[in-house]
Length: 264
Image 1 (spheres, helix red, strand yellow):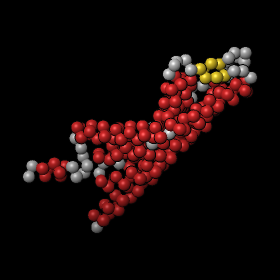
Image 2 (image 1 turned 90 degrees about the vertical axis):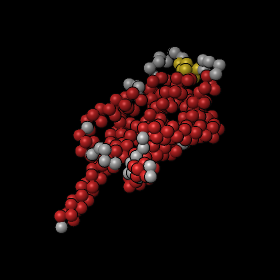
Image 3 (image 1 turned 180 degrees about the horizontal axis):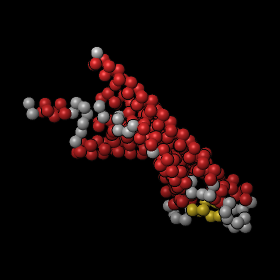
Image 4 (image 1 turned 45 degrees about the vertical axis):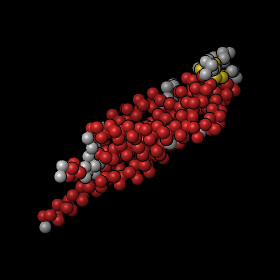
């Protein structure tokens, strides 16, 4: 008899704080294991990725007619850099798994009828994350060429390998995550937390934040790189607002129909 109220309380998927913490640990563990497995499996891709990372420096040296090369200062730096590249590749490859874990952590707090949004979330979040990573990778050579051009031609640019790789990889992942954020706006709208009116009301703040974000992930004097990233992110924000508006409009029509049926 004592267990019935507990079962009844959990029919809507509600969890206590302790259960949320256990669920969070479970999802983080699964995500970490997926990234680790993907990183180990992608170790053979590291040499090719490293050559691609080094290529913009080589090209910059050719264009500026001077020496531009990576410098490995410590004994273990080369190994550390390759581990970092492998982990980053693992994050990209395992993105379907850890993005699903984010959704799965949110799901227990939702009603059963709202869980159907999982397919739409994953179907949009995964390609957007990958598209963001591609966008970051696309502007990377242009940024490298610009930043190295500030050195005078007679000078030799010995760039710390760890700092260089860390800068490029963080750029790629940050842009990928930035492209996914509008999906969470739509998710919050679909579960009734955020209305389309609220999203559109803060469009000025959103544009400013996007501009600041793109300025931070592209720390150069090149406005073009920042512009290339900011435009699609702003478009995604307004696209998310449009989807939220269509959803709110559909919900309003259903409520009107339901109210009319009750009145009859």
